[in-house]
Length: 63
Image: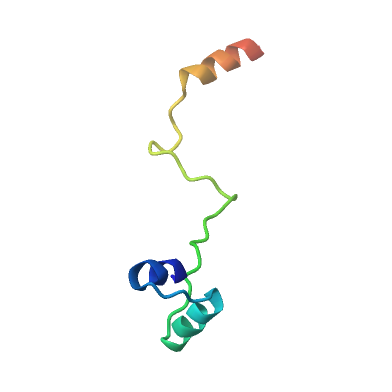
């Protein structure tokens, strides 16, 4: 925001000043969306019932 203010209006403000103004106006920085990093994997579109040819080759080599 400080950079945008500087470019558009030619006024240089410190980050703290910009933060204070935004807080007074009721604005706050948005946090990034938390995405799951682990846990249950999402199911496949076909429900996981499809056997891939690479899986068959792997199983044949394992025998």
